[in-house]
Length: 233
Image 1 (cartoon, helix red, strand yellow):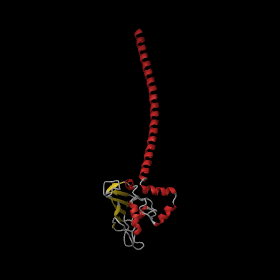
Image 2 (cartoon, helix red, strand yellow):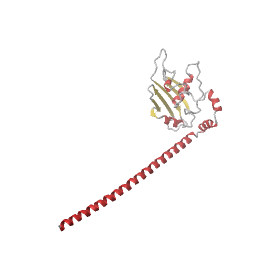
Image 3 (tube, rainbow, N blue to C red):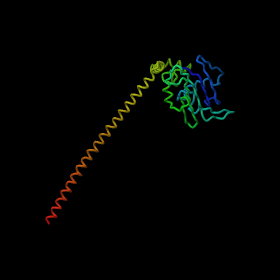
Image 4 (cartoon, rainbow, N blue to C red):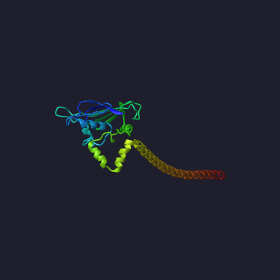
């Protein structure tokens, strides 16, 4: 599995649609300062679902949309697509080529597409979990991150190793299962409360029915007595 293609439009400094192809071996991107090398890395992180603006070197998410220059007007949306070669079926999908697309509009609306089909952010996160290519995985490592990893506490390092070992998805499923179990227990508790309330209402209705039956019986007896009295007079 490897990144074979990147397409960027309206993302940060990329005012025009730009395509970058990657071979299966090593690829180096070189250029002078300010030409957009780091923005390519940011684009990859962003399309994989990165939500932290600080990681994208931005104050707010809207700032990833091309903001214009003296010679170019600002754009209304940002779009990034990456294509992953999945010939070894590392990604849990039947496709040998997977294209992920993310769009953001100045209105705040956003879109995610998986092979040109609209999807949720969760679908993309689940697709790349334990592959090392998630938005918070170790596929993109800056120089400062190496020092940060070495200085992080044991829990943070453990998370990194768990991602590399491919057990993160199982821990996520475990958390989801416990969450569903907790929700089910809460539902059962509410059902019990409803049953108790219904039983109270049933008991009350039974008492009312008994009273109604007694009243009907008394009325019937009174009617009989009135008839007998009328016959005697």
